[in-house]
Length: 359
Ligand code: PMP
Image (cartoon, rainbow, N blue to C red; front, side, top):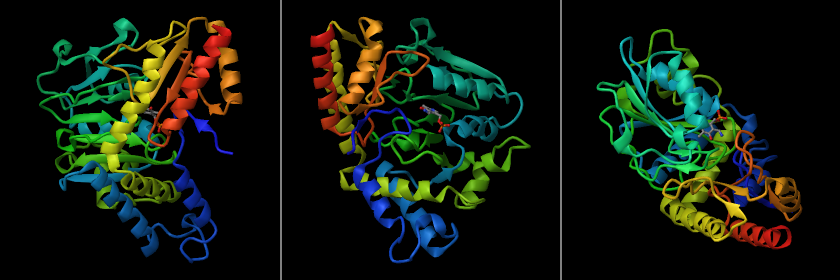
């Protein structure tokens, strides 16, 4: 029996997608083998790859002057790929917003390749908010500006797109495809797949054409977006199964009304949980209203000695993976696209009951 899964990633996948993959595993479309067992250069896989790209383009309304790349190494490889591809040479500075654990990793990686200016940080209030533009200290001529629209661990989400005069780069790993985005405002968008796209092992990159030719000398071939773009993301063997499954998720999303529908749903789901938390003295949210993520909802119990009981009992009730990240403790419910409203209803009912019994 499938249970409600609130894992932050790898996260729940849509059940119809898993069922289709299961059905096709031994005999994919009458070919007598699975999609994992054909050449990535075969006409049948080429069709999978091209259809997935087109569906993603449709879902996010990606303009023609952007390449869509399917990349190896997760979002972490892109932490390195961004400075390698965009610093553009000595003497340039990169601007970064520091909003939590993932921004921290991205900044540390960029510093290996050039100077980083931390434009704004929310460290002063324990990464509980997205710093507003009035506090930013931008560089005059930055090579690029990087931010993390949704901090998966802290549960902090930007509710606006920064306006900057250099290429804007976003790590959208945990909120891509959860609402429409003005792609034309970005130079580069990347996302590890294992939350809202598909299984782990693949990352999506969306790069504006004019940014493909400013890589630093010595860039590893596997991180070079120009190489990936020219080879249709097949300079070497791509993670074909993850690509195929991502394609099934894109079809599922389209059939459900696309990213506008996902935005509405994510607002309803997260509001239900935040409203419940705010109405209780037993649970609280560490994130400031206005910056609260629709995707990842961390919360703490008034008495943390009950954390163990909460996790044990929630799991027994069929609510999986509610433990907060090891660096912050408490709980975290991730409400990605594949997590249905019924999961949130079940979670809130469980939380109310737990409070009544234990609070
Ligand atoms: N950025 C964000 C916002 C993330 O949530 C994660 C993974 N949880 C990463 C980067 C790292 O992704 P990966 O494990 O695919 O390298």
